[in-house]
Image (cartoon, rainbow, N blue to C red; front, side):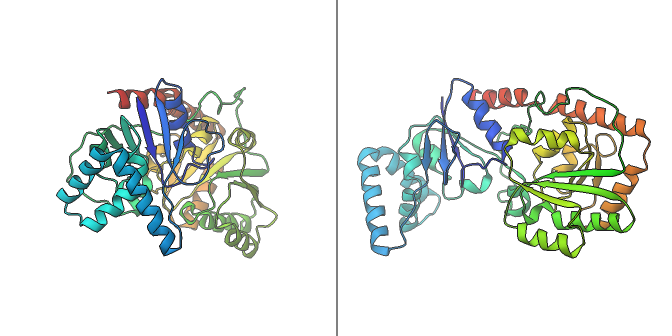
Length: 361
């Protein structure tokens, strides 16, 4: 089959939950075409970029006229079918032609499946699949449910839950030893520097930990728009000697940081699921996450890690202190439970098979 995956922008290196889907499908006999904006340096199959309009009104008119003329001449039946479907949905004529231009690259491509990787990417593209005779599917993620308003609540469509997954063979300790906390605790977070990730609340909790006499080092791996703000917070909270912003790292290099760390923190305000938490559990770290959306499904509270109420640095501090007071044998049992939890439920090999099965059936 020829499967089109629709993104707003092509996935970044940190979005491993999307990259694993792409690479899993590529290993099958299906042809995978990505539609989006930006660049994807390590992808060697077909990339088709969304139409981009010039800022000049005159040039825009020429772009739209040229694109629509080519589309209608080469794909008259698909174009007419699309406009009829738009009319049936009550879309005005001018708006229908705008949508036809926006989707011209999709309508002119022969696809068996169109898969929208985020629910919001389907807006103004609802009729494309039917117009070109393709099947259509949508992934709903944390952003779609929590931030973008959820629409059509009573809509009944076939669904299949495919969990995020990781390479459990790669994210595994070569040698499992009973771990003990040293005098200097090592915390880790792998995350975009984005307001959703609650990193400022994490820093506030760690400042309380420092005031109470605990020694620690905290590595934050990732980049993003909040770096300057977080560095300012680090300075105000007197954590300059404790907190290190590592920046972006290749995914394969992150394993060493998991290996050297004691406790993984994911104190997000909003979170779909978080593959980094799966990697940390697989690497047998003690994991503490917030109760933001999917994290309560990712971590089994008091079995594979701990869940803390979000936006409450004092409670996060108290949970860290609680962990430090636990018996070594109880923490070792939690580490083993966490690894087994990921191995049974979030192995990338199983996820790849689920996706292939989904598109074939």
